[in-house]
Figure 1 (cartoon, rainbow, N blue to C red):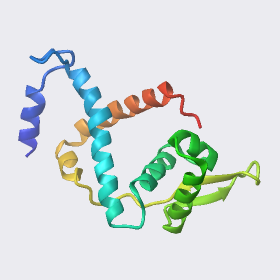
Figure 2: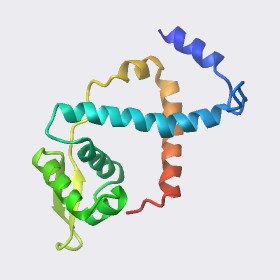
Figure 3: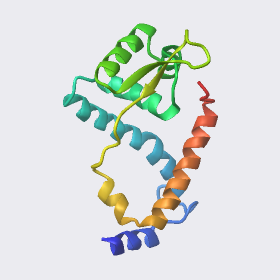
Amino acid sequence: MSAQLDAIYMSAPRPNDTGADGYDTVTELMELLDRRLAVYTTLRHTAHAARTTLSPGDLRALDIVAELGPMTTGQLTRLSGLSAGNVTAIVDRLEQAGRIRREKDPQDRRIVRLSACFERPVSHPAREVLEEAGEFKLAQVHALLTRYLDSLREQFQVDR
């Protein structure tokens, strides 16, 4: 299978090659990372929610806390665009499910911060595909995606 991945990699258009439809590879990658990844993340949340007592919205809130680190419910409200009442109910469900923990802020004990607590999945539908890429390619992709996500974090000024 690795030979197939190498063939695909070698035949892939290079960045800024313009295809017949007028899109270059960079534009296609941005669309893939923005829209398509969001769609499949939503579908994954929906499938997971069907197997648990959590909703897709609960899982989106959990993703925000897991990605951005400890935060208050007020910060989660602002970042998620949900109402304070909705966020409180979500946090209650996530806490009951053992997916979020409420902790007192060490600097100011009046402040309660939310922290994600969950195990990383051992099996994932994409795991086999990623493993076939090899360590070097995975390291390149990891570095690229990290820089891309860091640029999004800066763009949206996500400092909580």
